[in-house]
Image (cartoon, rainbow, N blue to C red; front, side):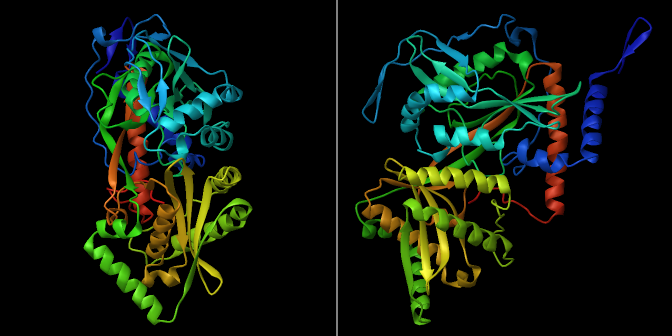
Length: 477
């Protein structure tokens, strides 16, 4: 329905939504926008899951943010706590949210960031200063279609201590013009390279930190249209948000195997079917006269082994006989460059390993892993499909588990996403939630409607290409 104002007719909100969506469709029809947007804006897990969008009511005036752009957020801090021997000093005064000036400012907080990273549970490669600084270097957008603004926020106690880092960006789509999306999201908006992203802080502090950030964005609601939260521990999503929740929160599980003192003890803890399968596969392999060699590659040898992994990863993706279709994450040049630079630096620090099985002097299976204290994160893998019937990747994972126990690691992280292969190890589950908010404004609601339209189109295009992601898997290695 239109509303008259004098002799002029003002279009209703539905017309504005139609106009905005039409502009975006016209732009996408004239270039490569949908493919780039699929990686940069509507990346998994949002379009991999069926999200029921709500019908939104008007936001009441009482719920609108304050007009005054205050920086101090009224989040209370808990009493001092111990995290693995590191005492975090806190007081009961408000937290301060401060925007860093630019990428060069990351060096100024690197030491404090690394301290926070050591407090994270689970430990991941994705919360480190190195991962995030390299991510910005390789993935931030500077084009006519998409432009990213550096929006990393430091959350400090009033005594100056760094309590959390929120590695965020504000993405404009398109980069220029009168109609632009403004979406705030965490570093990691890539094609399944960053598995877990979000606020970097001690787990006990996350709820407090999220409250401070929500207050900050509520006060700055005119500066964004959509806001995506990631890596929120279950129970910390809160009751009130900076804007209006878009759909139901998604759930991203992470599976961790606590390591006992011996392989025999771990072997006794796995499922009975898994023990029988391991034995039968090994017997079949040996009866056919095969012998393998296991090796853990480190240091300067990592560079060559990483290229072998890329090749095996591609061969697995190209094989049509797999029960679960795996994409080649490293067919993309930027993805390869990023992972190569990160892995080589981690190898220089002694924190990257490539585990291989070799048959007849040829590598037939490879697993990349990153070490963080007592945690070993199994990141990505590849194998020669010709050895698939022997369960070659299972054999490699068994060797990695034995190596990790002998090397005195405390936990092996099987990465994010649910699948049967992980469940055979009877791992502990740590679940994180992710959700999208629209700003409590007309712009926010229009952006949400356009986002929903493009996301639905993207899901349809994916299905037409024949690739159907499982409903219970996210970002598989």
